Length: 321
Image (cartoon, rainbow, N blue to C red; front, side):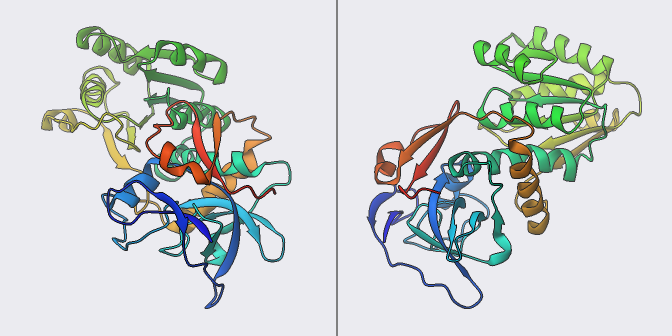
């Protein structure tokens, strides 16, 4: 079969022939339609992600959409290594195959599952969001953050605050459900003042896709301005800034901030699968919007480095379904 193939850690995948997997030992064979290029997929392929197997050569792709041998259209996640989603076929445990809603196309499903799961799991599984609460999304102008705004509103957030650096993208978030937007491009003093004003008014949940300096300001503002002894659930999801955080101990002693993470390992896999199923089933009725860029799998080498910050790269095999 044809597949994207990573031959050594950190190498760009090449489009090449690879052994075709056979179903057996309780595994389902999926004829792949589409597989999205995610940060997790890239990180696992490089060998740097904490869940990377280290096995090489490897077909990348932690998930995708396709068709089972009985004709059922499915979304699948965590195919059996070394057979990832970026190939004509993958083998997957049946429990990790989720039937697709009839009105949801395979490319959109492949694109939305992981970024949609990131905020849905954080809000429901880690933050235990209560309807009417206020949610701040730090780093809301990327694909995952834009979905987080929509999903927070869909799940009942009473107020959504969104931060980001791209001024145009930030402004567009109002149409997706953001009540307040805050630019991360301001000087630290101005940004800290804006954060303090929002925490003083009340913030219940923070979803963070950024990490780094903006989080230092966020946590300091929460400790200084939030109402006394009122819990703030801070859930860390991504670290696009690529920078560490310096956290003064007094920030935790002087506040009711609860620091949590959300990702593979912090949420049990069956719960992650359940969340993905909820995201897929809610995509059409919820009117979730996600920009996608379908690319033939044969062009994987040319598009592997695309950042996908404004449109989700989805590699397609040419199979319709």
